[in-house]
Length: 309
Image 1 (cartoon, one colour):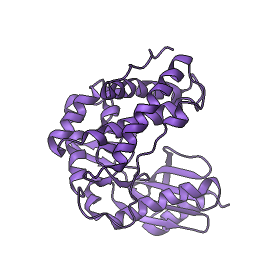
Image 2 (cartoon, one colour; image 1 turned 90 degrees about the vertical axis):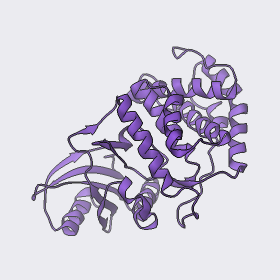
Image 3 (cartoon, helix red, strand yellow; image 1 turned 180 degrees about the vertical axis):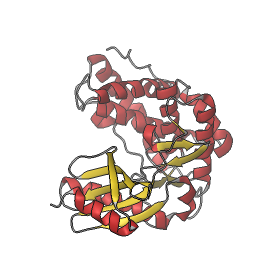
Image 4 (spheres, one colour; image 1 turned 45 degrees about the vertical axis):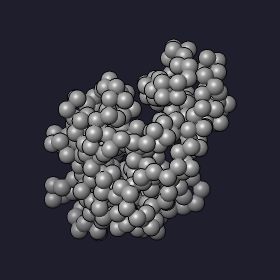
């Protein structure tokens, strides 16, 4: 399999400019690369590419294709994501080059209250672009995934958390099933509105990494963003959601609860899969605390155990 140099050569050909500097960003393992490239003309761009091979790389190749297709399938969202500058298709790699939106002045977490409000307003505007319109061909419907049956039994969790997860699984599964069967407003959702995927520059929101885009309830994104705000900035998730709803409209209760149940179940599942004490484990613990507490309140069930158990 050809190295990433092949994809970089494709970038130089597509942009008619040589690469003068390379800064690895997220990704970077053998089958998937994200890099900030400095060109000889002074521009900086971002390359996102995956190896074109079956096996572990197949999913990443498909994710790259999903992001590329989004630009043509959903032009309404152009202003809410970085500009697509070029696509790259070589014998060994598939990728695209996009505008570098990580510029001086970008607001990074922890976000201020004003920044959090701006993100909520921007996210509501993103959803309004496609809300309750005709379903867009090629953007898949998103059935809320139920991670709870696995989360309750897999991985390494404390006895207290395992007991809580098993008790929560019944109520959480019920609200997820209820939302999946309901007919409520739908739109194109990003699917991963958290942390580094949120770009706020001079008060203007853009979202990067659209590999999990789908057609579903806007609550999917709104809840994810609210949990990020509480995790990083200590702003109550329920309060952040209320700000979003002032501009987007109140989210149906089944959708809101299902989005929260899906997000919490995924965190619990991942906690049982990553090494205790690792950076990722500590991050998941920080994210689980507000998610589990909020979910227990929404479903009127026992609160989760303390985080030190």
